[in-house]
Image (cartoon, rainbow, N blue to C red):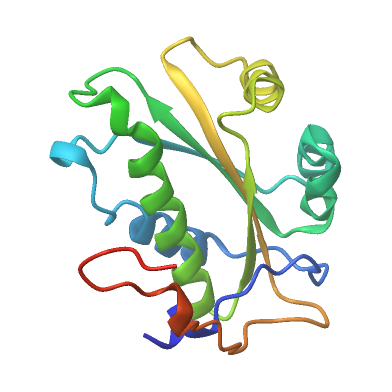
Length: 169
């Protein structure tokens, strides 16, 4: 449970690649996520080339750290085989969160950069990777070894947001 309580969005990375073995562990964690009807609609593009990371960082003004990351993972939803297409974003959210939690476990830093449902970002990823229409870009995760920031506990518990049996103002 420590990973849940210490995970932070890490946006500064050392100039160091993320090893293939660690990337594989991140992806294994992502694929352990629950999904609607066990449809597992995920696909992943792993990016480790520095020049590609720099180009990918142009997806939005909030993705600049991708240029300095040791790796990035693009999380995609594959419409083929989806039995519950209305749940694809929930499925991919769970996969993205699992990957982020495993990053903490592996002493890596990571940040979830939203792609879906923003059309311009989805189109950027689709065009960038020349994706077929059955692949839906969902998120971009910049990953690396933290530089000057890392994963630490911040208490976010707020009892005023908990309601039993009914909602009370």
